Length: 120
Image 1 (tube, rainbow, N blue to C red):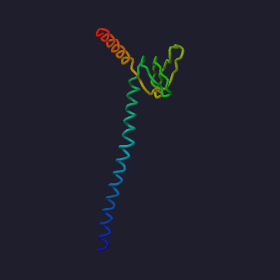
Image 2: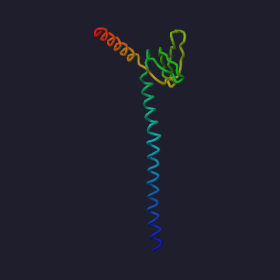
Image 3: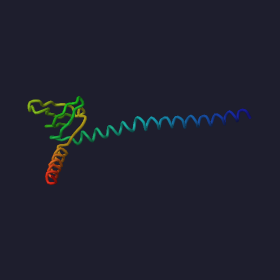
Image 4: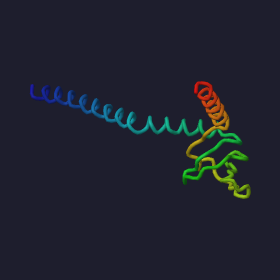
């Protein structure tokens, strides 16, 4: 009789331990692994979308324009000085502003300014 009570108590504590471990693994997955994979996917999409003419910000905070690309390397021109061209690894790029987006913003500003002049 005592032996059966010990076995029953043992089964429920083992079930509780397994459930607790599964719960902890799920917490670790949703707090650490899943966001990390999501960030890696976003970084890969960013690297795949790079093209010459895009304005970029490097991880060190410099702004420049992409003028050439290889598989892992981009050549970035900084400032108005055409002699300041630096090859760097694609992973050193933190943000990208597409050349098309800059053109669309300029067009929107011209339209807005023209609209204000007509209304005044």
